[in-house]
Image 1 (cartoon, rainbow over the protein chains, first blue to last red):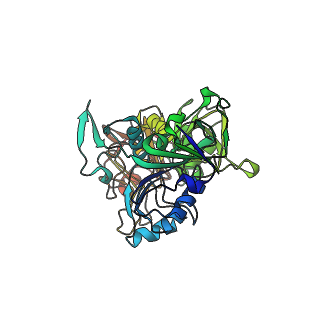
Image 2: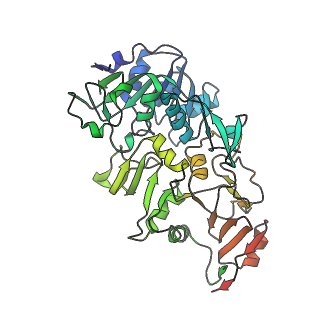
Image 3: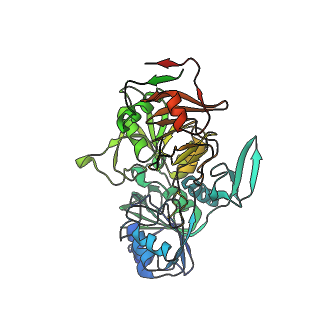
Length: 218
Length: 224
């Protein structure tokens, strides 16, 4: 059952130290800034964060990293022109990086949400990113074994929600949201508006409410 | 057929983009990489029926957004605001990479540090110890699209050729590149070896002298 929260701080108040937190967004598009700010204020420590990037500028995910409360980041593209917060932490050895090809990042979370134990994937065969991974030839093609990425919490941004947690997104801000929603024990979605059940077209719902535990307007 | 364009110099960036664009099949689903490959879109003819895919979750991507069109929920893989075309669709990341990995995309155009004669691609990491690695969707694209076109300058700043026997930079994908478009020549990577389809501003012999890998003339050579 989905709970509607009035305040982002309340929606993240029980995230424990050491949690793995899936954070939606592709750069700024779809980044749940208000939930990230709430997590930063909450102050949980020793976090593992999963995001496509590693923060932009000094706000949102970058501000969370700057607190030193993120022990490890799992992402595909940390280095950007405005990723100076991450760059400094990485160069001084204060954050661990697991670099994952973008499609594997998505598929590993999809697998977690779909109850798949592991899967053979052709991406990265013969590259440094798959060194040491189990490899198998299937139908004449090489694949490596990839394991799911499961979150304790997902913080995502959607466009609108109804009271039962059905979500619709906006344009390319959808990105990792629907996949992360399935892959975490507790999924928190920030939305621009929560409407009564029945107001979203069931045919247009992208993330069904079964995957969404908390919604908060921000 | 190898065509030698001797009455001109090497291609500039615009001309190179136009050469690549002319080879995109009508009606194809295409992903253009960040940077130089993005400019291929400017040269697709009206009515080409080409649908652009951006791996952050959209088919039917339009040109860069201007003025009031800028919407930060609508960006391309380089996080630049873009527009949507009629018939566009949005989807989440797992679907976006499934359509790539699943062999549904016809062509992707990528930049490169190096390409080997066997079609190995190196384009994500220089391997320098202090460099922060970032891969994004490069590895997924390299092995996913039906045809992988590389677009790059043929020579590095130190004058060495970027078409090599074996890549010295860390690999993005093994045996995945089909064609290499450069300012000096267009190369076809085939099981029979590297065929030179066109040269720009130098002859096949001059090219072969500067690129220290086995090159072959495409059958029936022409000159103009």
